[in-house]
Image (cartoon, rainbow, N blue to C red; front, side, top):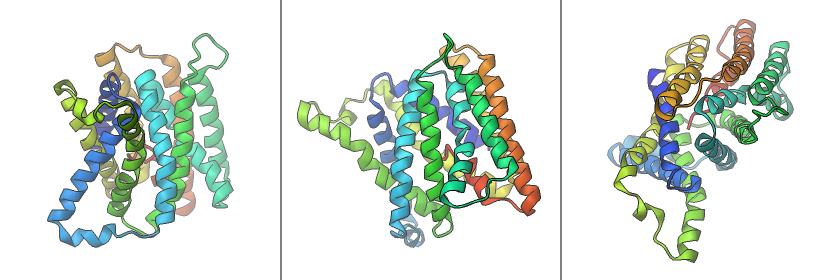
Amino acid sequence: MTGALLSFSVSALAIRALGQQLTIFEILTIRSGTGLIVLLLLLSVRRDLRPQVAPRFMKFHFARNITHFFGQYSWSLAVTLLPFATVFALEFTTPAWVALLAAIVLGERMTKSRLGSVILGFFGVLVIVRPGLASFQPMALLVLFAAFAFAISLIATKQLTNRVGTLNIIFWMNLLQLPMALAYPAYLAATDGPALFVFRLGTDLLIPTLALGVVGLTSHYCLTQAFRSGDATVVVPLDFLRIPLIALVGWVFYAETIDVFVFAGAGLIICGVLWNLLAESRRTGTLPATATEKAQSAES
């Protein structure tokens, strides 16, 4: 979890730094391209892993990655425009969206705890966004859209995890999302004449470029390993430490103020997630699969 928390924070810093000179499509191209290169190098060395990335259940991969790409684009754009803590706090509404979509799409029962998590998440959003007030930030709606897109993606991920391994999901995530991200920069290069953006990267962007490519893989790997090593009732609360950590990062590197309303709203959202997680654990006596996936809303 320490690796996951650091990866999420570094990812936000790298996107903010790259966003000063690159578009979000170009940033996502770097992320997917670097991740794909690393995975291809791994597969070239470990031939025994190659069967794990064979194309299987591609309709679920396409559904997952199309929705995840839109969510990742919105989340990355929000990181360049909003305080870090606001983005991370609103991102934790993903479990509420998952609960609603699971009931509608998968026919899962809407229990009291799941409904409670949705209601607390809604009130938490109102506290953070404060619609109608002078402090209202319309760009916060981008994060809510990203959380909704991540939730749809997680529904598809749930179907995939029952059929393929983690390496298969990560490999096809990078392979499918790379052309999605590269399409717009390639179009601009073809129509406007300038060289593709990779040839315009200066030495000042080298560190954030490499960092984004690395943490795009380590964040998912570390979080997955944490869930394999510990119970969700331990891992999920540790994941919530992302909010105060990223608030500290924003304060140190970008002089962002510590907004009490963001923490108050995040508290409501977190209470809803924990209530549902504990209720699910007591009801089933085992770790619910959806709880694991809910906590992985920032898996990539």
